[in-house]
Structures are given as C-alpha cells and as structure tokens.
Image (cartoon, rainbow, N blue to C red; front, side, top):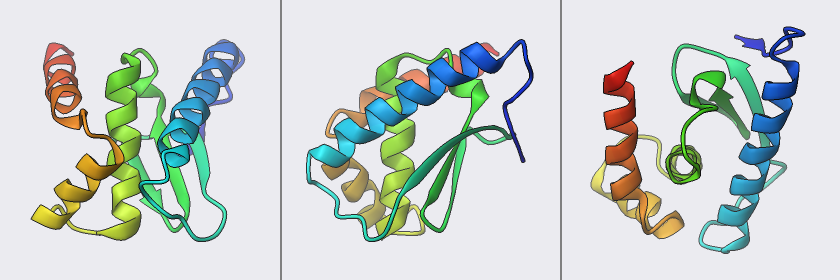
Length: 116
C-alpha cells in the first residue's frame, strides 16, 4: 500500500483527501457512532476501495471520482467495521444508523464499478 504522492496526482489526491475528511467529519458529527481513540483517514493506492486497520481507514484513489453519496457510503461502511467486524445483520444495521441513505448509494457504487 502506498500513499498517493506522484507529482501529477498530488493536487487531485489532496482535493480527494479533503473530501474524505469533510464527509467523515459529517458522519462522525452526527453522533451515531462513538469512536474511541484517534481515527485517521488516509488516501492511498490500494486494490480495494477501502480498508480498515485499527483506527486507520484507508480510502483508495479509485474512489476519487465517485459522487459524495457513494463516498459517504464507503466511509460509513468502514466506520461500521469499528463496531462490527463481519457483514452480519447487525453490521448492516450499524451502517444504516451511521448513514440512513446508504442502500441507494451502495447500489450506485455497484453500478459505477460495473462500468469500469
């Protein structure tokens, strides 16, 4: 996993990093999920759209062109993994608690991924 630091991608990566932080802040400000410790978000070049390790959430540069609603779903999905590790019924309930409109944007993400 490498941080996106290529000179040509640097402005795009910084803009995307700010979008990720803004959306994460919106979700966390809703107080629907309590996070213990410092939570960090990093924009990186990885195969998956996102992954979580401890209190670090890594978001792939592949998601930079996705609409805010889809990005919000991706972040809510990873935040839910802080509370529930596996994709159980409780996990999806947690995603819905964090981001009530997630289903529409999850479907939109699937459509976007199928276009690639």
